[in-house]
Image 1 (tube, rainbow, N blue to C red):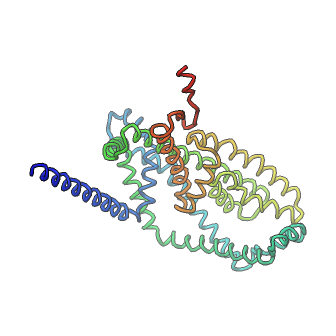
Image 2: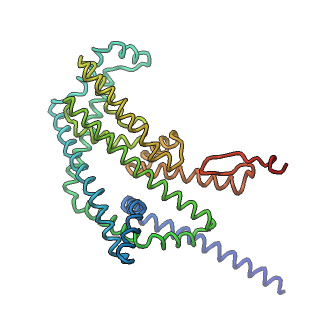
Image 3: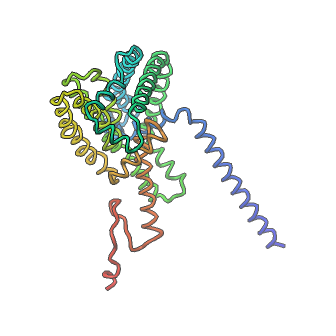
Length: 376
């Protein structure tokens, strides 16, 4: 009788535990679903907390452990060097996009005319496309339609940006508000997560360190590379007298977030067009500058600032960045490499601790353990 009661008690305890875990998962999912509209603000608040935490620590030591004052001062620095310039650049981008849309509507700019110039200058292009059953006339129509769609989208968002100023500042205020607590209470929040997650404290500390390392490297590295490439690209277009150099420089800045091919998607077609209309000097100058200067920035700075700290191969960085853009929009240039780094970290822990004793993980690179030699 006593054994039967113990058995029933254990079954009741298991039922209660499973029911609690089910409700825990459900409530957690509902909570994150509730925060979905504020995902961007919360995510970038976490990024700001990670990027500026070293500055916060210095101010904290300087001002005698006054946490609130140090956090506010850190956010003020963040506003001055990051957010205000970004808002200025985005405002200029949308303004230039609206002007481009007006020129496309009035016919002052005709993308089809540029494609026709290229076909006349390079007849081999038409023959090459015909081998793949591609019609250059259809390409002209598609290019014109795409130009109208993209510029119209930018112009529409320019209007919405002006009309939605209140919403913009509300989102910005929410981001800074959350970032304040990320800076002030960051260590306590990490300790709370380590205590709550059932992964093992050592593994959790390793994963959180990887999360912080990859986030800092990705944001700082990609933004520096994008800013440098966009500035250089806009400058060379302006020097060559290309219309809308400021707009195309900003577009190159955005596209430079994509490794390897980013800025070349703009200066490459412009160089081809310059060759097509007979401006060989300008075309050659732009090509040499694009390959030798803009491309060199990507080849030198990105591996140093991004690849070295994330310890990810270049092809993984490229694929994860593209996938991140496809799934998460502009936030994807951070989230994509971050998920890739966590994927590598999780599998590294698994292989080191659960699977193959002959393989060890050293600085996120794999080396064979000479176990046989050690035993001998």
